Each structure stands twice: as structure tokens, then as C-alpha cells.
Length: 170
Image (cartoon, rainbow, N blue to C red; front, side, top):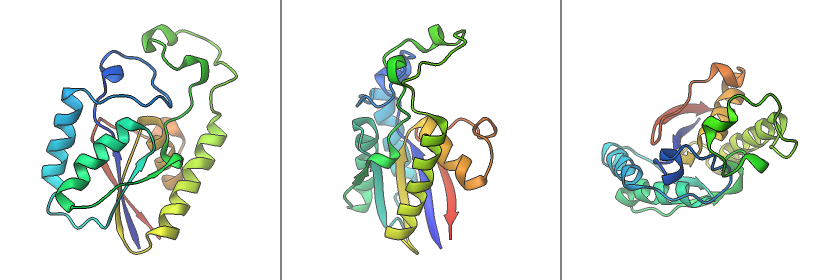
């Protein structure tokens, strides 16, 4: 049995400004750093065997803060990257809500969910019997839970910044 502590990165400058980040690096703002520090304090006495992060800066920075009390490094993987929003990347999110068609360069839901399954398989293969804290992003984390619970994405609640959800993998 492997325990996955699926976590969303701390708030970023672009989150606060409602900008679609996608696979851009992103920068934690002061709120995001504080969120990560609060979570690190809350989790400091938990037994966590490994820390894994998306290879995007906002997740790496969050994960390093979380791993510090455990005196552990951070392993990165592109499998945990946020959804590629294509030409929507960098756009003001409220300006996109009334568009009827998605651009063709947005990562497909099928590809996103296949990547989510590949991530879960990778965790079990590399961390069997361990407890792993993995820091990802809002939509990829939703896809991971969608695959895990075998539910449509719209039935998975949005994760807050620095929220943790526990998944038991067998």
C-alpha cells in the first residue's frame, strides 16, 4: 500500500491576477510562500518518505518548503505538469469564460488523464509501501483524482492552494 499526499502548489502571482498559467514556471507570491510554510508546519511530524514535484518552478518551490522540515530533497517529474493550455496560456481567465470553442492546441482531456494514470503507476512502481507527498497543479491534480476515483473531472472538487488530499494506492 502506497500513500499519496496529493498537494496543490501555493498561490502564485498569476493565480492572484487570474492568469491562465498552464505550463509556465510561475512564481509564488507572499501568500503562496506563507501557505506552504503553514502546511510544512502542520505536516512536520508526519512520516513522509519522499517528496515529488511537477518540474515547474511554482510546484518545486512549494515542495522544497514542505520537504525542509523532513530534511529531504525533491524529485521532479514532468508527469505532474499542469495541463498545457496552448494559446490560452497567459490569458486573463475571466475573458475566456464565454468562448464556445477551445483552441486546438490545448492538451486533450484524454492525454491529460493518460498522463495522470501514468503518474499513479510511476508512484506505485517507484515508491511501493511508502508515503509520498506530491506537489502538482489544480487541473492535473483533478485529473489524477478523476482517474483514481473513476469519476468525471466535473465531479472532482477544485483544490485550494496548498490543499492536501490523501489517496491510497494498491
